[in-house]
Length: 380
Image (cartoon, rainbow, N blue to C red; front, side):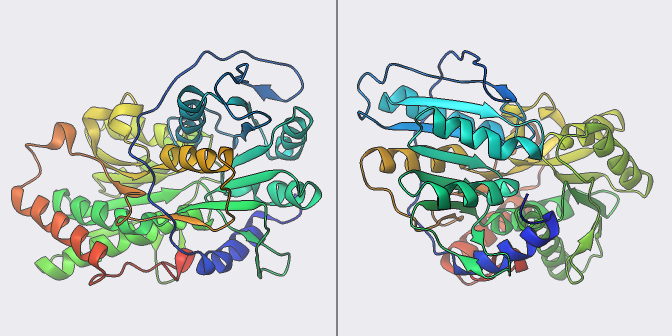
């Protein structure tokens, strides 16, 4: 990779400050199709049709981060958007999975060789590979989920054929943090990330601010383990696939008294869920509605959601209609690109007063009277 993880993280944090909010994703349901594996990439879940009803010559393709398309998190959400586009738009698609960072470039090259005209990279870590491919293939359009582009010297980079799909999850995480502080019986909650990159720390920043606001409102001292927003330092497992490490970190929080934990680490969060379930504690899921996407719904207070699938579908639709734009899409509470899930099994456990305050702050964030800040998205 042309940049180290830390270098890319710093660059994207700068690049995100230039992002402007795009249009809201359509509220459409997901489609599904059968998949068939092909050779030619590390690991594939290729999905192809004859394109009947689709735009002639248009082929939407996707390359995953290491978690794969069954990660019950951001890769899966992105893939669902691709499948929805195949089903509803009748276009030809192809999706390949990455098992390591060494797969990103070769997988993208394979998609180019396969005739893909619109290629979506799922995840911040694909930024260098998408950038390289876009510069070398200016006739192909690209999208990148969870990151803008940047130069090697960390200055923002804008390419005519790359559209960033970004999500200001600090806004929704603020609401989850407020709710977690209000529901904690031990006055200690925790959070950890997979890697210290902007698409992760933005969740942790919002979560910390929500807890701080609850303490300010109620004269309490709920403590957050695992993240210091001021110092931008905290607990990270080092990747997005080692579930055992998620269990270990979470058990450490539990041993310190935390009774609610928000993992921001894709499938690693399933390891956190194991520790929390066995100890009778609670969690906040991220990216998707964990009540529906995981088997741990009974312990999930709420989820901080990115509507990745809807953003992917909309970007494919625009590109297939010849309306591709490199203007970044930024999901917010206002446009419905981010949000928190329903209370589900906690509906009767969360006090009405706490629910009302969460809704009140949601509206304040939407109308701009309350601004949730994060170094990962300084201009949102």
